[in-house]
Structure formats: structure tokens, C-alpha cells
Image (cartoon, rainbow, N blue to C red; front, side, top):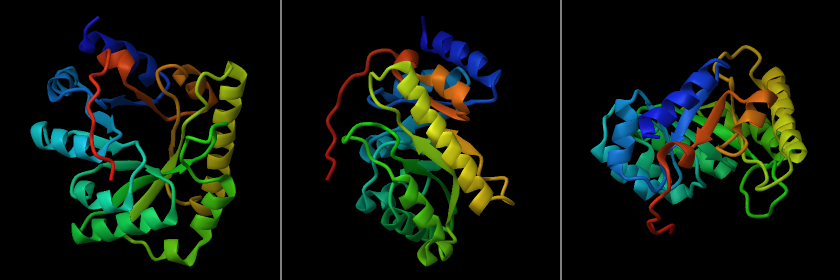
Length: 229
């Protein structure tokens, strides 16, 4: 099936549930992203800042780019002029830097707090208590150029369905609690980004509003190496 056919399949399925599709274009070339764009997709997710910057310069300017990979504070300045959503905010320090760079460009950048829900040491994210502590902090209250619009989480790799469902459910319960405690009057706090190609159906059942699907749309990735420092 073509990229357009794959996209149509997912979009029809997800839109019926009111779920947004983030097409993960990591390691795909600009031509593949353009093909997806021509098929109607506007929201794309990238993991690596340099790759994202390169593609953003080549592709239509109305694309909504999501940064979904681990973000170092010294890389924020490169994406601050154009990024739509940073899904991978895992520290107050990073949030402060995003706010600083957004202010330089007279922007407010939407962010998701990445929550650690997996039973794996390799995943990034805030603990449940850390997320609440961040939102209660005096420093967070001063940040005027960022907007927390929800939470993001990545389930354990190759886990049984029950464990995956439990992890997603825990994230949704945390979202509901944070919504009630901190964002009760703010309609913008509404996103629960969870679910990828292998587990998105479980995520949608658990309350996901945004899923990240890549290889099932674009096919096999062409691995490139970018500096991470």
C-alpha cells in the first residue's frame, strides 16, 4: 500500500474516535513527508532536532511539527521559531529554557509533560509526583511563553496487553487528576498523547487523544546518524 493509502486507513479509524494522528517521520526523507502532506496529513512528529530543522526548511510551512524525542536544553533554540508542540518535556529546567526561547520569538509554545509510565530504565519522563511538584512550583507559575496542553507517555516495549493497558490507564488517571487540580478552567489542557503503531488501539481504548504512528504509514526507515550533543 502507498503512504496515502496507509494514511487514509489510520485517519478514518482514528477520526471516528476523535483521535489526532501524528505521523512520525523520523528517518524518512522529505519526499516521503511531502507525499503524506499531499495526501492531507498536516501533523508530523520528529525525534531528532537536526533532522527536524532540515525538513522544516524544505517542506510546506503550514506543517505542524511535534518534537516527540528527548530534547536537550541547548537544542531548544533551533526549533523555537516554528515548533507547534513539544511533547517530550521531562524537567522544569527544560520548560524554563523553552519559555526563554519562545519569548525571544514572541511566541507561546504548546508543551506536553512526558510522564514515565514504562517498566524500563531507558525511557525518559517525569514521575507522577515530579509532574505535580513541577506544576505547583513558583518557577512554573512565572512562565508566560509556554502552555501545558496535556501529557505524553510511552508504554513498555513488547509488554503483554494487560501491562500496556495498565500503563496507559495510569497516565489517563493522572491526566484527569491534573486537569481537575490545575487546569479545571482551561479548555486547552486536553491532550493525552499515548499509543504507537503496535499499541495504539489499546491507547485509544484507554483514552488517548493523540497517537504517534510512523513505520506503519511510511514503511521501513532509512537510518541516518545525527549528532546528539
